[in-house]
Structure formats: structure tokens, C-alpha cells
Image (cartoon, rainbow, N blue to C red; front, side, top):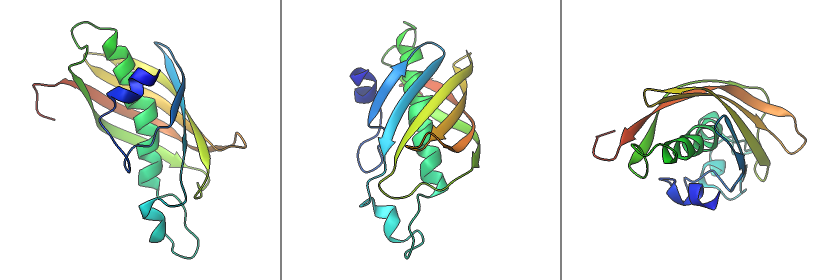
Length: 148
């Protein structure tokens, strides 16, 4: 599963995946800890920082869509090592805040993967196994020689 992380097109400070716990053709599960010294906490509710929804969405997309998309495209010889995943839509409901220092777990279930389009049902849980965000994220796989 380390090879999935090595294929991600992100690096710190914009990498929101620490570890992939499990992956299959139909789902993926991974974790990330939001370090208290991340740059966005300094200005996002300066007296009581919380993780911005856009960052929560990005974490869910990196684990639940991009990592799963890389795994699935690696299995298809026509897409192997040429693919990039571009997010095309999200519908996320935020249920609880995610605070600095929290470790989260993202679970994603493939809804469909056809015609190089991937749609997933994604949920994020805190360390108490309480759901903090849920929804759907979709994207498309684009070959390297195409422009995103």
C-alpha cells in the first residue's frame, strides 16, 4: 500500500494521507492526523481553530477518490502509470468539527468506475469512531499526455 502513497501527486504541506489501511476493488480505508502546526489553523477561527471544510473535503478526496483511483487504474494495463485523477464533483455534509491534532479515518466505497470515471461514497470518522463528514466525490482519470 506504500506504493499508492508514492504515486500520489501531492507533497507536504498539501498531502493529507498518512497511511492506507486497506484497499480492494470496491473500497479503501486510510488515516490522516491533522498536525496542530498546519498553516491554515493560524487564521481559521484564530481563537478556536478548526479544520476548514475544504481541507476535510481534500483529505476525503485524496484517500477516498485519488488513492482508490490509482489502485484501480494500476489494475488496467491501458491506464497503468499514465493516469492522473481530477476531481469533478463533491457533495459533502459536515457533521462535526475536526480540531488540530485529531486523527481521522476515511472510508470510501466505489459507486461506479466506468469510462474512466470514478464515483465514491466517502465517510470520515474521528478517533472516537464518530462520523464527522460524509458524502460523494467523483472524478475522472486522465492520461498523462492529456491536459487536466
